[in-house]
Length: 289
Ligand code: PMP
Image (cartoon, rainbow, N blue to C red):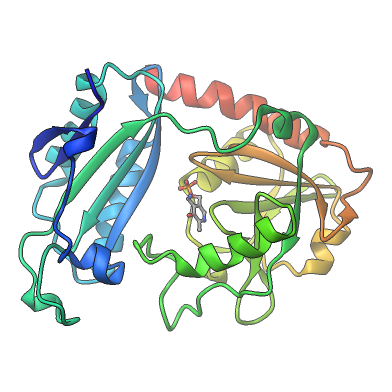
């Protein structure tokens, strides 16, 4: 059976899963989304993802025409119908089809799309050897222009930085905020380890408050690793003992070089290794609760 895609209450074969070309999600990137992972049939931190989706929608004045509990059921059903146990789930809510103008009041029915499929962002070798990344010259959106806390369908800011990374032969790129501080990567949050302490930019540094990020902060605390959400500069990255990135798709991935400078000895550090293995345990244990 072809992959079944959920669109606003109905399932369609992948090739027939279509929405209007007048949808403002397409015309203007007007909508919100989530990227989640299922492990052994359980969606990791599903409630947190749904809460973030509804908050993103609220921030752009988009009323999702479905209750949170029905949305949770729809996500689970999409996995079931596709007999998927380990999967990546993309949940998208668009503003809906409208006129060719910007006016969101002239759109009707927001569309809800749920795709459950497989994703392999990075070659397994990067989890062993670590990524080499660069700092992009494209800064993260100014929070007063479009808050990075909104996971909106408008990802051009991140795509511009991703292009810079790819042109430099890197799979990820660091984005600074409008103050020149480290914000995050194009699709992942960033952490460093310095003198045994785990540091990451605070949520008001112009970042998406990642669900994996929050899980790692909790995990570190339970392992008695001191954590601090604090502003970081490129200097802090260059003199860090370890560095890694987090995201639902990437999970926890080590970074061994930034802007062609090795981080510490250029090898994956012990705290990173510990958190990578504990995170793997957590995603499976959470589902059994
Ligand atoms: N920052 C950005 C810009 C992202 O797009 C993402 C998700 N891909 C993240 C951070 C990580 O968030 P999460 O852990 O919730 O997937």
